[in-house]
Length: 281
Image (cartoon, rainbow, N blue to C red; front, side, top):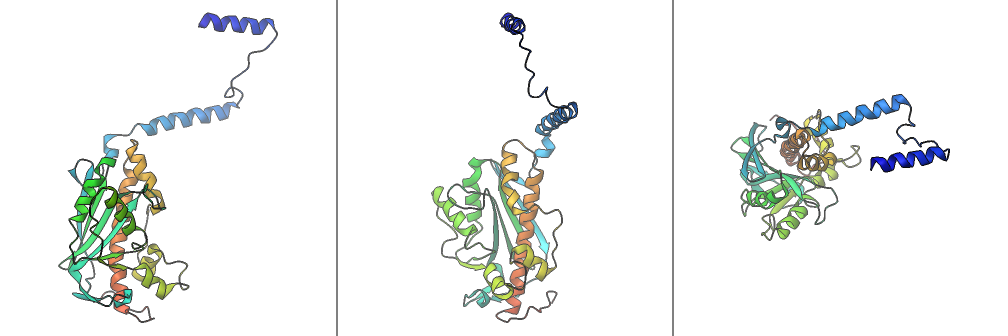
């Protein structure tokens, strides 16, 4: 092979044709240095230490991680009047299950799956928060089974835009997994709708982050936006660090705590138009 290359070079020289430099050689020296540095950095990024691959929680099935925590929060009354959600009923506090998913996309459809499901409920005066995270595609069925075990026939779901997004997405995943959908037929309080009725046109938008800031005084620091969650999980599956995946879990946990706080707020003001209520009572 080297003899052939030498002969070609000789023929080009005899013909008076100068050797053509590579595109990289034509670049200014400072640009070539930057490219070399970037290459070294990219190579270093691909080397991930075992500690960087750690996902919070314990492994309860192959590829399925579980975490549980308990929080002291202002406790809602034993019975809540949920007519503010246009459901003519009183429900016991212990029946509430606040839930939120982190998914591989925001468009929905059969190609979108949940890689994390978080849920919060009241155990006595404390808010219990549980999360399921899959670290492999094969663990999805195990996650769906465990989440179904948290739901009873009298559970009252609480979400933020969950009627339009989270619940239909999970229904699709249960159907594809050939499992019965535990959310079907349950009472569902979607807090987005009462928030919109009260504050649409008053706030810049009615996203959960806005509601928690305006109503609860929650200001998130170093929060990973939900739109970046898919990249965090897919990057981990491809061998990347779990740093951003852990931030997704923190984002999800705050969503759940805020759901509990916003529910208590809108239940306290009921059908009134005033937003004045003492959240520390």
